[in-house]
Image 1 (cartoon, one colour):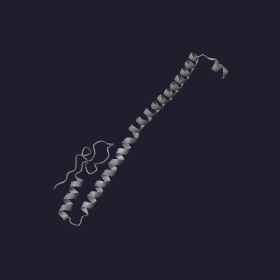
Image 2 (cartoon, one colour):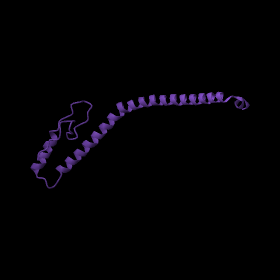
Image 3 (cartoon, helix red, strand yellow):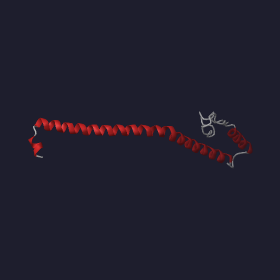
Length: 119
């Protein structure tokens, strides 16, 4: 370490500045490569995994709607005419137009035409 003590202050400052610059460059390169990898992974998630999650959500919503409709049809206080009317409004639900879109969830707005019920 005698060589370091024998150096002039200007040389020591330039050496330390150079080492800090190299360290900053290494951190920057590693960070940039990480961001590039994250960009690829995020696009994969957005293109492949999120649509399937939306489909699962729509399926869950449709299942809740079906369960609600079944409960309404099984209600003891409804007359036969009211049950027939409820069953008819559920059967009028249109099918989705796109091949990949998930069913109607008893006609969610924008997914099959909107719910058709009578008061």
